[in-house]
Image (cartoon, rainbow, N blue to C red; front, side):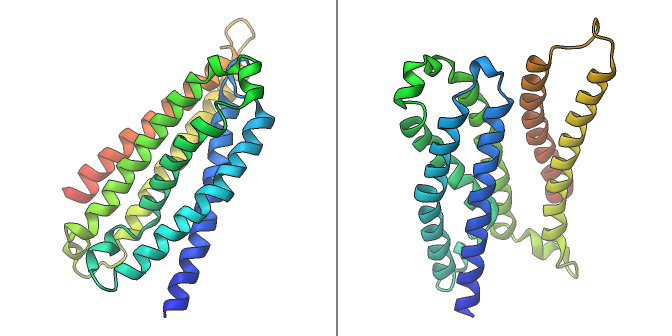
Length: 220
């Protein structure tokens, strides 16, 4: 049983670290080019942070929780992917300030002065990940899954609610871009500010949707 649990923790760690790498690069790529951090430097340094620094940290944390919950069930509340992702997102943020934003090539090209868009968006993203993590911590701590009686799939359905929220936000962004493309050139919104506003708005919308999902689907 222990091998299976630790094996699952290892697989989950690999997946969430890889997802973090994709998301951080996606965020940087959505920023207007004149305010982006160097894509080449960012990809190399973000890969270093994710797979060399963050990965061992999250492996240690998940293995620790996997062991401790056998002695105290309260640790089971913290042994979920939402908490793990919030932790590694925060860790990535602090290491990125040391290894990416202070890179000599970035500083030499004056791109360090344009770091604020990435930092601003990523801070919002971190906030959303911790809101979701706290929600999933509260489910076992408050015994809310037990309130569902004969519905053991409640938590899985709740996960699907977040997946549906993310899918809807992405779908709305794609539809907005499509509508903008088919408009006449005179009425078309410039692509760079549109992408930046859509991405920022998408993160905020997902956060608000997550909060209402908790209020109406979980606690009420």
